[in-house]
Length: 387
Image (cartoon, rainbow, N blue to C red; front, side, top):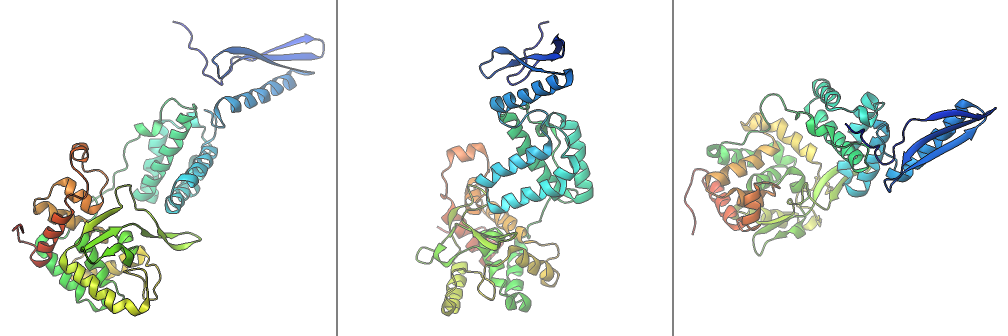
């Protein structure tokens, strides 16, 4: 069997010879970017110095052939290069999440490993230990960052394939996520929210009422501007989300969670009436946001989530989260007979299915979805279809 050729940017065995008394030569073959092999050599007055000089020259040659990422690059160095790349192309919130995974876990735990040593077996054991010690969310974030780091190494020729692709998925123990509100109890939930004095005092009741009708994510609802509400046509546009960034505080991020998040949807009549009354009630404040804080600032989604968490037992819906409202809208629309594509358009989901993505146009189901939600808000058990 023929011996495999050296990869581009690699070198063969270093030969050390004393060519004359007191003069040593270190020589090896190096494969250049054009695929050709050439001899590289250095001369010094000792064997060790000659070898060191040659290795320094090879490092320079390697940096010219494939950037700074090699198979022996440490994961700490690779993480820094990955983060530098992401700062140019990702939102501040995403960069912050990635940086926490790098600083709190990857660098201190496995940062001394070389790229080539980050095998699927090692990474799998490491991520399982993170899930056990620090939780499912931390493990998922670390897996995502490691996948991006290794993809960067593959693109730079340091690896042939991404080892994270062979790592098992991080499964959350227990029930998978929030549970939707049963359709037959939806109106009960809305009435409980509208009549809850604490939520009304915190000006959170109408926020949750809006989410329960539109399926907006909590960050999307907190970032909704009045300019995005079309009262003439009964529509709302999702164009920004409220987000907290370390060292910056609350900001409006001018794009959503995914490419499909930006959407304009028809809104149920009852919800548009609530928004109209809210606009009239708040008009003298001059706020640009529909659901700001009591002081007119950007509302922190985490604080609003806490409001719901603190009141859910009193509302009679223990275990409910803001995401339960989003799932509930999907459940109701499915029960009303809407297609997965129409529901995905209404909620801003990225992936209903490849077939539906190809054969169904976007926003075609928005008006029908609003009609079905209108029915649900009036009578959750109604299955009649308005003409």
